[in-house]
Length: 166
Image 1 (tube, helix red, strand yellow):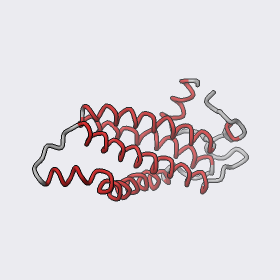
Image 2: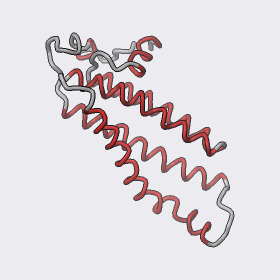
Image 3: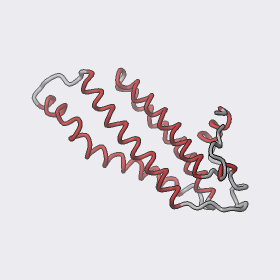
């Protein structure tokens, strides 16, 4: 994997990318999200750093919208969908997977143990996977790339390549 191509993919919003690059970029952002969540098991305040992942997600989806000839402003709707979807999925899964933690806290018991943190980590991974990959899937289904040059540049090279970052 070429680091310069990965940086360009995740940190700039100019140009166009195809569906494969969007999915690969989403995998990279999700991997960073997992690392952040692992660190936040030991340092709970560290989880706020995860908000920084909104920027690479914006860059990825903006370039994908550019491939369809649409402005990057549509990316705000995708990011809003990720945030709202994550909130809704979290509200559904948290009582199912971590409900015993809340019951113990209501009884006044200590809920700072590693088992409770690991359960919260599991909820975070499921929510992140569902929202990140769900958004990428929906955008790839909705946005059809222009086969010719458009206002955002030439067609992406990854349209026919199985690994545009390699």
